[in-house]
Image (cartoon, rainbow, N blue to C red; front, side):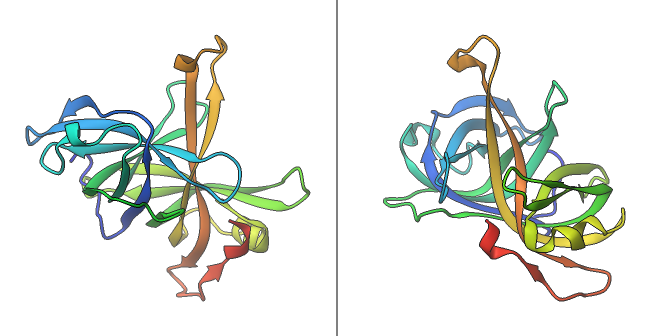
Length: 217
């Protein structure tokens, strides 16, 4: 797998329905064929979250999975900046993949060990609630870094905005997607940006008490 991501510090579990069929994406460095499809993950409110999953041919016979199939994926989060520089796009590289008879509701979990690489900033939502955004860097075994935008809800937004660049965190949360339609207004113009919605975080250096904001998810 490209990037040699440490799965002990980067772990994702998702359940949902395939929104698209698998298509060939690339060959990895070991000669395995990698296939890609979009997964639709239910959310308590608003529209579902959409994230791409990457699966090697050693894990699944992709012809057995088709649009509407209910699947469970465990793997690692990968992130890349959009070509237009207007956000980040996530995908999940599947370490384990299974077609299930019945997907559990709202299985969307991310665990990361990362450090803050840009000064956090806070803003008020349209409902006048504080929200802090951090850009977290996940160091890969190759020494390269992958960047994950994260949002922290009202309960700990003011604590989070005071954290310094370089602060190391353990983060748990869920993947969130935002849908955009390109100017031509066609389905082919639909695109997504992603972030991690933080449920809990812990500052590693001070071994501080875990800060939890479960009610704001």
